[in-house]
Image (cartoon, rainbow, N blue to C red; front, top):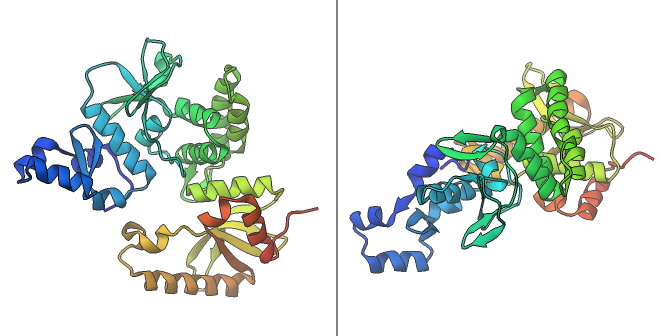
Length: 327
């Protein structure tokens, strides 16, 4: 199953208690499967199979929670906010795994928790509210502002990069004019706010780059900046001997090294292997590296999530390959 969900697919995965009993489960069977973690109770009366749940990233799991909440809604005018809005827009959460639905009841001021729901006391003008597949949520711009100001920089930069990519990137190329328009629009909105975290939001809006194609690339870029690296390139194009196109995540000209964020999903997720076995993926990657090294004379090196989570670990990884910050 593809781990990236849209709302329609998420709805199709959810099963009600009545569905399961109609398909032959007794109440006792249902309770046993939940306790044995063969069925996951997403919200009251809404379930998904454990295998399907395990195949999902944090974004897909939270989208299921949002859809289940909406299906159980009692008609209040709630608006999905923050992470719950982000997954409706298809924006990443990086390593954020929300335990609660994040929402605002439009027109009411409050801040309280209820089982599985975090109500937020925020002002939402009408222009900040959109509807996606029948679910009201904050607009993409407002969601970027909220995520960059309220959550860790690693989460915020992943959201900002993904939102900018939707607006300014075609293929591997980023349109500078569209980037400028996006930054002016988001920056102007940020400048009109004086709430907690707005300085961080402004900084991440200026830092955003849509050429980062995965959250791991976004966080790698953030960590490189924290370590003082400057002048590296993104999405470097290499043409092979048969005129084949290769794109490398990072280029470090001073060290004559290409760097690539290497997520485990490339080797373990069916949707990313494109029908290949793990062994075939590894062989294809080796052939690709051989061609790139032969054409450019540069070394390709890799790092993964386990390296970018810790700044010192990432620094040592880079320096072990001779990639040092300037100065």
